[in-house]
Image (cartoon, rainbow, N blue to C red; front, top):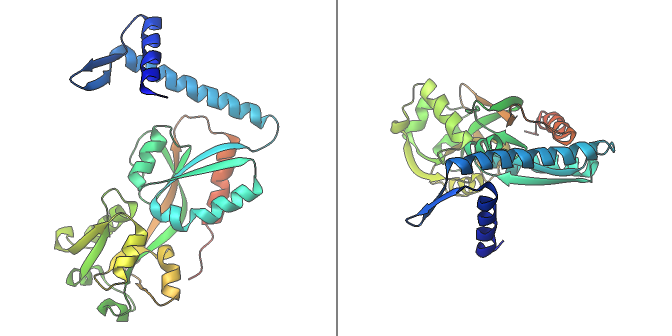
Amino acid sequence: MTQPAVTFQIKQLEEHFNTRLFERGHGRIALTAAGLVVLDYAERILSMSAELDIRLKEMTGQIAGLLLVGASTTIAEFLLPQTLGEFKSKYPLVSPRLVVANSGAVESRVAEHTLDIGFIESPSHLPTIVSDVCCEDELQVVCAPSHALAKLKSVMPKQLVQYPVIIRESGSGTREVTDMYLEKEGVRLDSLNVVMELGSPEALKGLVATGLGYAIMSRTAVLKETRLGQLVRIPLAPPLIRNLSVVYPKEKFRSRLVNTFVQFAKERLAVPLEA
């Protein structure tokens, strides 16, 4: 909609309710107390409208409709594509839509009901979210074949402080789980020689391949590169195993489509990838 059209709609709403819904001033706009009430009811009305549409479609016995899925970058890039493709093949009337972000952002959007479900790499932190473990994932040290660590069969956390490291951004599930692991094993985070922070697993792999430093990544993210000899994976001792989880809002109607996809994804993701 154009700005004049939006302004006209807002004016009509304010006239209908005979109250101001927005505070305007100093170049800013904010909801009034009445505006917050209207917003709450509007969101509930839209949610019920969507639920009605889904329930009526389900009466035909078909699994169909829009499926809004959020996933952290590692899961979205290396685990979910095949699962989504197989699900679409099995249920052609479904229209999946995948949103990729870090775990914190995915969880927030699920809590806001702008995503049906999300897949995250770190523990859930929001009380309005239900979290179910769907599979396990191992994080390992990844480096270039020429790196000193590449000769080791396993590496202890305290050995890592000797070498430059490239890490994921704050808010990343991989970053959170790695930080917790290192602190538990007695490694102070400020003792790490961090040379760069990146927000993409692909960018991380490209930089690690130059020999600039090592990274701690999901083994599933580097299967192709290790097979081709471009990168080397070294297990941590003790191993760093994390749970990957599917999250969805508490007390929210979940369609048969969403429930079917969750079950389908759990079964597919639980199958270990080739070493």
